[in-house]
Image (cartoon, one colour):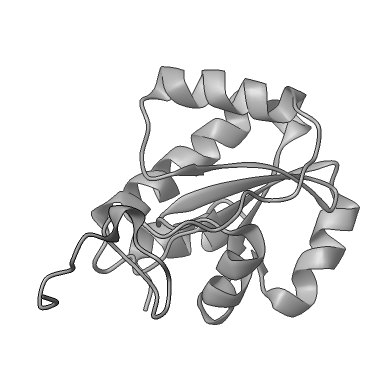
Length: 152
């Protein structure tokens, strides 16, 4: 499911939708790209906020940033590729090189500062995926061997 604000990115602003199959071609064709992962936009109000902010960010950075909307069916697979754990997220790339990610909504001035720093950085591997505090996968050691609710 999507929302009218996210659909407007494609219809009104001409932002392409990319999926697993088309992403690498999109990245090779653009020096700098920003990939929008809205997540469950019906549940996450911030997704609509970022859908409004993204075209303004692209205007602010001129032709320096090529935006793309990640297809709903490819979000989880590509989330694992770029290793972020919060939606909505903007993933910044230089060709096929990962530059960084901004998750959730930020203040406009923070976007300006953070994006400038991200675009000035060198490509790296995405950071290791980390579970949010309090979440543990089966078999993972817990810090301090603290019991988890229901364990005694």
